[in-house]
Length: 615
Image (cartoon, rainbow, N blue to C red; front, side, top):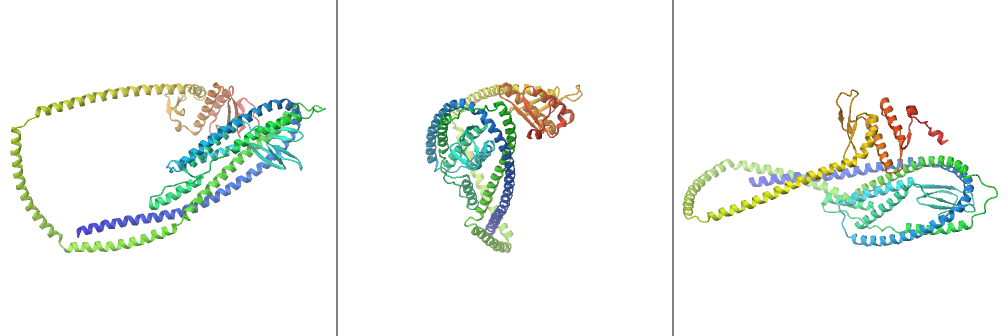
């Protein structure tokens, strides 16, 4: 009966654990419903933000259109002055375009070979499983792709046009009319019938770098998805969520993703065809250039000055427009992500069999609680039966018989020990083989001592090697830090005489050591994070100037832009930082934007108001 009682109590513990698991399952299902409601509210808020960003972008686009029309009027005058100069440049452009077309054909052939290799690799990887690290890698690469598209959109040259009725131009190979806008990510020819042509090249290497980075990221992303047998990140996330749901219920499923078609080569083919077309158009444009005008046009310098003023105003508005468009793109991406998350959460709620799972869990909870109550009644009945059987008397009987058995076993043990002693004495009298055993033990001892000496020599050698490596690493780190430390100390001594700023192995600022106003007092040292906000801001400006000096020594161009910097510095520190900025301005070009021009009157340069520049 006691064994039955113990088993019943163990079974009651199992019922308690099952009830706890069922309640945990019901709580998880309820949290999924709360998560779906919260994500739906987040999607509505993201949609509102995206609408606000689009309205602001439209307002700035209208202002930019007015400035672009004014700039277009100035460009009309400049175009006449450059017509004769264009005649001389077309021949050189024609040779360049032909070479670019040949290079484009070579790149297309290489891309087709790479695409064939990629498709073969994707076919081999179609049957592979989804590892735990694949989905975070896909999300990170998708995030980088979205950031790259936003940066490309923000950095791309935007060509806006508004043509009179019946007028048309050609942008690349496409004839256009009316009004609209094009984003130019590469050099593009704009043909103006009866006038000539323009070749617009997006400025800077950043756009080309972003485009190449986007291609690399897109290729890597497509290859990863194809290797996993999926068609999109959303499909991977959906499969992971479905696998998590199944893993919670049956702890058995793993996420799998669908197939994605590889990226085509249309972009490279279009680029090659565009280069061939531009070469043909350049030859035609050279043949159909009009004769020189009878009345000489204005000088290029005069026309460029007028066009530069109008273009500067348009560029200023274009910068603001690009910023608002980037904000709108970011808001759209956030809205899309919130919508996907809301749809995914709703899909979990709408999953087939979920309602059955909830009902089944509730029914199991009720059944288990009923079984637990019945088992509690059985445990109580067993306890009463055990009490009625007088277990104390039964234990006394067991103790009495046990003591009797122990007495018999004791007498048996005494006789057995006597027999063993006699057996040992007999063996001792005729014992053999002790010398051989001693020799074997001595041999094992010598072998162990040799092994110990060998390991001691290896440990000594490794300690010596570790010391050499640490010394070498310390010397190499000090040599890498020396150029930056030299420039950093130059600016730091202008701010804090006799101060020094440590640089850690990752070239990040460390502890700052400086003396107080009383030079006789000892120096105080503190970590960088312990400095005040104003002091950290000053150290940040000094670090930027020191890195600029390093770039200057390497022959790289430097441009330093400070926007409302040093606003947390007191009057004394601000005066010292002005000395630092004036010293750096002798080597670099520095643009300092501030809403408080009265704080910078003694900087040694005349301030210029942005409002005046815009007008």
